[in-house]
Amino acid sequence: MANSKFEYVKAFERDDRILPSTWIVVRIDGRGFHKFTERHGFTKPNDARALHLMNAVAMEVVKDLPDIVLSYGISDEYSFVLKRNTTLFERRESKIVTTIVSNFTANYIYMWPDYFPETKLQRPLPTFDGRAVPYPTTHILRDYMRWRQVDAHINNLYNTTFWALIQQGGMTAAEAEKELAHTLSADKNEILFSRFGINYNKEDEMYKKGSVIFREFEKGKEVDGGEDVPDERMTKSQLEKRKKAYKKSQIVVRFVDIMNDPFYDERPWILGTAK
Ligand code: DGT
Ligand code: MG
Ligand code: MG
Ligand code: MG
Ligand code: MG
Image (cartoon, rainbow, N blue to C red):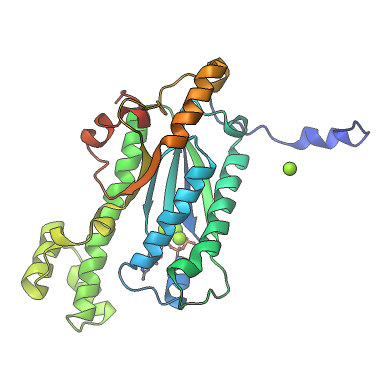
């Protein structure tokens, strides 16, 4: 950039680099999706097309930013975990968040017709907000993931029961809400089973667990995404090796438990081995 007497305006910019060696979670969330889903005729409580679209979009984001080691999606939101030692955009918060948000939004609109061939997108077009939160320990990051998955479970059990009462039980929304006030999980399971013959355990795993995106490697060719050394401290050949391994790895979406150890123990390349 050429020097000019106007350069001084740069001094007004804020340094927003995120603390080094912390896990960075970027969570994006659809803006006003209550309305958006109504207007576009989403099925209730879950629209499989919409969730598969969210997953396909998140996959594109992960392909674009290989430092994302783990992602988790429910409803109109997605969380992206960047590896602890990422140096992406010098860890500048606004650059990381805006890049992910605009990539996600652009892909959502681009891929919409593949998932909703019969529904033309209407204005206001879907947009997403985003935030980045640094987590200093793997333990806290794991609790963040648990928080989102517990939320998915609680909401889905509630919504499944709520809509069964309305769609199959003929209740109004107000009646269903009243029926469910002060009920526990066991009560909702019971309502579903005894009144509607629905065994909640047999509901779609994607609805119950949410969607988890991560890398699978060929056996023996795993590349650590969590606890590895910063890129600056890796040799050229190490970087080259990782690039090759990443190219050969498979980005997958699974509907699995991320509350407990097995998911992470079986895949130490995601977060490393610390707990
Ligand atoms: P916000 O995020 O503050 O701009 O406002 P909303 O309206 O996006 O609220 P939020 O994000 O708390 O809740 C997501 C909304 O999207 C909620 O009203 C339910 C709706 N939604 C998400 N997934 C589905 C779906 O698969 N089917 C239907 N029918 N609605 C869905
Ligand atoms: Mg909200
Ligand atoms: Mg929203
Ligand atoms: Mg939401
Ligand atoms: Mg530029």
